[in-house]
Image (tube, rainbow, N blue to C red; front, side):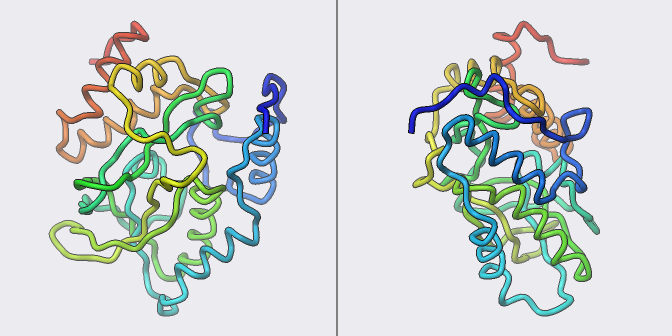
Length: 243
């Protein structure tokens, strides 16, 4: 399908600072995103029924009233937009954090596409595990699926994680290598240029990177691949790091 112009997209509701709010995740919001994607000729969306079926399949083994741990590695760390009982430092193995996804909605557009984080195969990843209390599991997972499973960009997966020194089953979302938006790993300068120049209805792509790095620093990670990426992004954007 040939992409169409997205210069006049339908209105979109979100937090005034670009952060997602729990109350923003509604059927109306999904319809808005579908309309935006349709304007851009995107073909990666799923139906409401497909999304609900995915959630039901992934949670059918859960005991009624049992809590659920969610592993977060990007904006879900610093902007969960869910009722979270507690958050702890966590590490998974077999996947690593990577800007490997094309970004044309949210903090990117067809005119200024950016890059989105995903968990890609190989290595390990330190992030945050959010605990959802049993009484909130159904409502919060519905919100989470609206956020992460709008389309075929990710697929949900249960993994074992080290959560504050204890082994725990966690639910997370892996980059779909067969999906339309998967780009694979990119050279630092290429990634930095796209992130530095990209923006959309939620704000700039670089703000997402900066917020993620601040959260990583709070977790004790202050010198990693994303910090090298930030340095190059700031150089291109002529934007000094705040002190």
